[in-house]
Each structure stands twice: as structure tokens, then as C-alpha cells.
Image 1: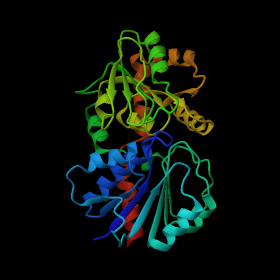
Image 2: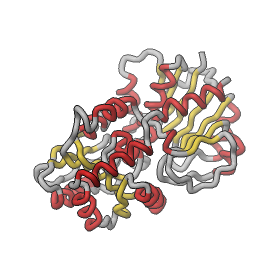
Image 3: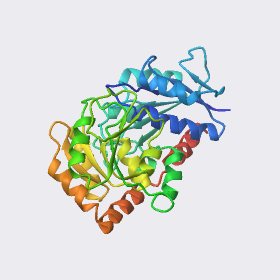
Length: 324
């Protein structure tokens, strides 16, 4: 049986998107009888999230340095792996896979092109030029959980939310969840406001009447109860798109804003700009426009066209090929 080592990280500085999508990738690998181990910094929110997911599983290992014989390593780190890490991975593993994020650019791209067997970039745009042939690019390869597919099938039919969901990712490094709930409360037009605090974020004050969720294992349930969402640009934006929840996105960086611009062009999200000066007038416009059923439906359908929720399957299909 083949076995894959997943090398990733998740904390307040790096967020939880890397860890969460690798858990989803691990589930797909395990479903095909491919063994999985994790290497992740201990005593971090990401490490705790993996431990919670592992639960009573006896066929998954974490930070077990006695294990040998992995056929491949999957590296998923913010901005990509260093040259030193890649060189070590190339010496130790028969196959090396790099998974890129959905907003931040990858550094050391030329080194990655030379040393890696498979690259996966899930964003609508890739700011770093990739010259390698064995590369998967675009939202078809967004790695999200099967629970989002379940909600996608029901959303707008048996399930239809009527709340405004605020989620600034698993870390909210700038502590703006409370500020966003205050802004949303000004334009909510009778809808309830729900806010999610991730495992790497600090619980702060929110607008009066806001319902808070602390460290949910998935956002699928919260999306099922939402008419629209205000998110930090990242995996959450793509998860919302898969379900069909229209979003307005706050950006952590200029690179995030470039991605949000393209998603806005495709009708999937509204770019509110950088976190330190969001465009609240644009948020007001978004909230007003999505009150109209026809406008809401257009954004709903645009998201679902972009992300079908089957990215994990496609990525593991490619991993199986490089393992042959």
C-alpha cells in the first residue's frame, strides 16, 4: 500500500486553511487505501485540529518520526516551501507534491518547477509564472470537504438560510470580526448575524445580537443557515461559492485583493478591499443588492459554477498517477 506524508502548518500567523484542506485531502487518500501521516508543528491550533480529526482512527499518524517508507510527501505551506525543505524532500521521498493556496503568491517557483513532481494551485489567478508541465491550476482543484457537497445539494431547496455569516478565517490575525459584525448590523435588513471564531483567533466583542460559533469543525452547517456571508478572502470564499452563498470579501494583502478582483469580475464575490480600510459603502451595496432575489440568484449560480466541490478527487487522481 502506498503511503503519503502531509507536511503543513496552521496557527495565528499562517491561518488554518492549509491544515483544513489537507485533512480533506487525507480523507480522499484514505478512501482509496492510501496511507496518511502528518508532520505539523506541535502544540499549535493546526496540530490540535488534526488530532481532533484523527479521533479514534488507527491508520493515521502525526509527527511519528519512526515511520519510514512514505512514497510521497505533500507540502502545503504559506508562500510555498523553502529551497532547503525541497532539497531535503527530494532526497528522502520518491515523489514530491506542492499545494499552493488561494491568495498568497508562491516564492521559489523556479526551484519548485525543477524539484517537484506535481504542483496544485487552486486560485482563479496564479501570480507566480509556472513553467513545469505537471501542474493543476484553477478552482477545479479547490480541496474542500464532502460536507460542503452535501449542503450544496440541499441549499436553496430543502435548506435555505436567512442569516448574514461573518467569518474572518481560522485566525483573524487583525481581530476585525467584531468590527465587521458592527458594519453588517447596520445593513442587515432584518436578517440575523452569525459570527465564527476559528481556533487560532482571539474571541472579541461583537455587535449586539450576534450569535457566535467557536471553532466549528466545518463551516458547512453555518453556510446552510446563511443567505450571504462576509469572509476573509481565502478558502472560506471558495467554500461559500461551492454551496452557493454570495460573499463580500475582506483582503489581508494586495495579493488577496488581486484574487478578489478576479472573483468579483466573475460575479462570485465583492471585493471590500484591505482589512485596515474596508469599503463599507460597497458592503452596504452588496447587502442591498442581494436582497433582490434575481441579483442573489445570479451570484449564487456564479459561485456554484466556479467551484463544484470535487477538487479533492481530482487532486488525488493526479497523485495516484505520479505514485505509479
